[in-house]
Image 1 (cartoon, rainbow over the protein chains, first blue to last red):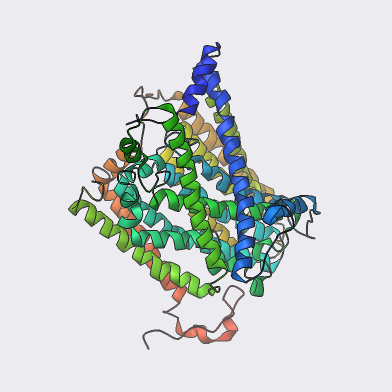
Image 2: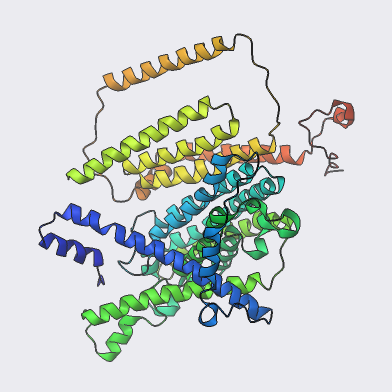
Length: 372
Length: 195
């Protein structure tokens, strides 16, 4: 197995050659991928906001933002700057400490989850054995932040919005986790790297979406519900709740919620790409192409091309899914809260359980096709 | 190895301080909502200590189950039944608090004496790369009975919760509106399903 580019190894090696101890070199390496991921996630949000505004405009036959920069690409930056300079209002009789902690608790787990998103064989912050499980565990912290924000605002709309958000994320976490479990069953590992590797054999034909079509649909619906995207944006239903738990927030604290929701959307799209659409592997395997062209697979320029192609593939797949989510948002009406909970508990949960059972049975029956 | 050990020591100190401080806050805060939120902090610091002990799966499960489910459930219960009422200060309340403090201090002294006196056998086996497979093997061999019993217990509590929430078995005298206190929901009791 060719391991691809190992940037960390090269960095540590070159620093050790300067006479710095290996441990110190490893510590010096640590901030780079983290900073890169933070910047990447933030830029992802800006792209996302721009896409949302442009696509919604196209859906409604408008033009959308067009004056700030070419095609309006600077509009999200302007929005962000506006939010930074807005006054930070603390409502009367609100709990100042919890009011500040709420948005922080919502944003932090989402950014932490980027630890396990792989963009290539070695292009991941940490390859831990519990990768995908860690993501599920971290996303279960978010409802506490939502409840905190709803409670601390001293506003009944906020409280109801917070309670709804928590109820929604708890009930959709179960089908989400069950469909992830079916994937884990097939790839024999919780590590995101192994999950992608297991799908990389035959290009597009070996992607998990063909073996787990039901799981794919369940995962995507639950992920949309976890992100509170429109068919499921009950916590901030404008007609009923003003803006849900965000009602009293302004300025930077509101921006944290805003950034958190978009980062979460990109993260969910990345997760779908990793779990079901082959992650960084391209539809036609790059090894096949290099063999056809007669290029040595170990040559360095091919490695660089392969790594860039991997990053591009992951982002391309994720943004295709983001496009689908945006299109859904501007096409489909909102469901009611009872419909939402019925869909989660009475429809998705039994189907996810059946999907898990069927996957286990198929794995026992056809171990070659279902990763024995 | 010095840097790694130093980092471990500092992390352990920070986590322990967080854990003890948050646990004290849970007990000592008068506001029950603060206590509930701090309980989440206690669970998260415990998950951090599990990571230090090379039990990554256990720590993720700790966050998922205790923070994501148990603590959210507690918060739900508090926020849906939060009656704003001023409690009258108890006469001689300090006796209760004092005796509680004495009992707690005694327990703490006992436990720390035990943990200092006991000659712990520290395992020298190098930590496993992945703890998931050994845990699963134990679950399905020598710990199979407790594992299945726990699932039956959960099923029983789930059935109980559904029966309570549906309120199928209403006592006959509940129809009288005079006995309504502030804890009953201000809605008409539903018709029995079977009739």
